[in-house]
Length: 417
Image 1 (cartoon, one colour):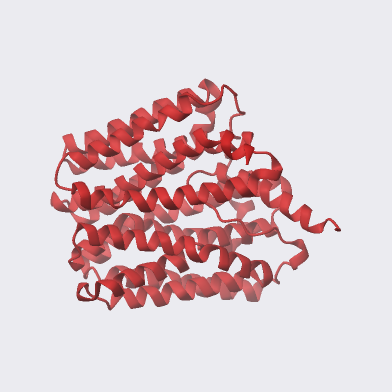
Image 2 (cartoon, rainbow, N blue to C red):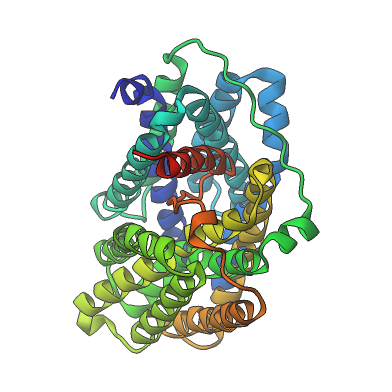
């Protein structure tokens, strides 16, 4: 447990950032709707966020190398705190779109700092434990932060101020942590043809997941609001989806370690279709069914990112983890840039219930892609696979931490007792 205690400041900072990001994502959608922003404009805000996220994957490693981890962290924590306040001071759609782009860049850079630091501090024997603790921090922080919204509401200044305060506090544990100078993360070079050759299914899977998960996080609150849920109901609806993703991730991962991983992808995607169709026919008079449907949707859909990464890692060489990280992050970000805009147009053109019809159509397409890849390519033998590792969608550096823990576990499994 020594390594966990050593990483407490970094994990604390990560938890604070995750809480603030989760709070702000839901809050922005609800407040924008209160201000009468067009639904499509709200979708464009989601697109802008992931455009900034993708740009940071390319540029942030150079910034960290130039000025160091703590300076980059302090700078972008200040940007996120200021952005939360500007949102409430300037109620203009164009300004909000620009702010969300800056926030996407900032959050990606912040998590790149934290995760490269954790990667440096955690020994090979401790990486699985560190990843597990990190995922627990993510679950508690993002789920818990949703319930600050009904406490303080969305129609005033208070919740935005609380988000800014949260981002300011994230600097404290990093600034007062140890004085080690971790190596800057490697720059991410996109060789898209090569990552496609490694696993077309993983690439298309990440696009599909971005289109649905990105839309759920940004447009999901609007779906709940349009159906008639109050603020507490929307917070519960979003939290149920996040909890569902945590509950089923490891059972699906364990299944994928024992069978063709693509079967696990197929099963989870089919569950996402079923949950989407169920939610599209459920109304606010059955709120507990909405919460159950959100839980089921998250349980099936959110683990698909980790499953897609595992499919790619099974076919990648040991020196290709940077390529896999860069490629899958790129494809996910492209999908997440498309998803909020398309889903917001669907809601505006039809109705709120059409949102989950949109996600179901995307998942049906992923089922077709998965079946075609199963026919085109044989499965990877079990003895040649890496073990499944659940991933956070925070920065590409998480792949490095997961990849090394995965490799260590695989080597241990092969060692005779």
